[in-house]
Length: 288
Image (cartoon, rainbow, N blue to C red; front, side, top):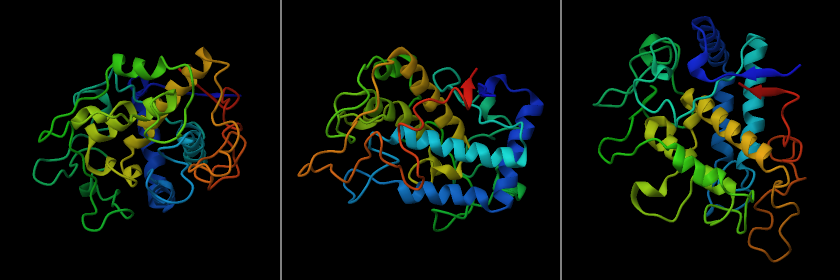
């Protein structure tokens, strides 16, 4: 029977506590940092050689869908009743949102070093030391809105600019694709300044701190953010049932993207799972 992922604002106090406790247990056991390592390993940009699966590629959405499922299964080994909630950043779009409460994600970092001092993931609480993807400080950092160069969270209108696309993706299948739902939801654009960051990318920039870069999984809000990205994709799929994953076949010989992007029926490392395998999810989970 399919389980339900809820909006984080609708969680009861007990549900918040259980989610946090399961995350902390994965961290204590060393398993959480394995998820961070996976994301760091597969975080590659257009300019990098080799296969891109996690970002700047058509598989951005199915790769993170599988990644979320792997994390959720790990949580459910700790507590079978736990699911990953989602953060609708078009709705809960201020530092005062319940998301950032003392009993859940904790709040912003302090001004002098961006260190998060509140909530269960504060370094001072003794349960959340950063081990992967950093060279110096071991504490969680955030810098809401980047005051030195202000940026806001995406609006419903900005998200609609992505969801209005009726084609999944388009050549050259990277961050420069001018058409397609995937690239516009991932949030790459040709603008300058803060306007270059849209939707998914803009959220990472707004939270700041460790949410910037491949080690962003060090901030547990990563999962709530990507659960909402997955929800947006799920609803887009329902509205565009004939708009399947692209490319449906590998790029032809001689194409600069051959061997660099995953086609519909090719596996997405590190799993033996294809984009086609995760296209449907209602048999596993649904969104409230």
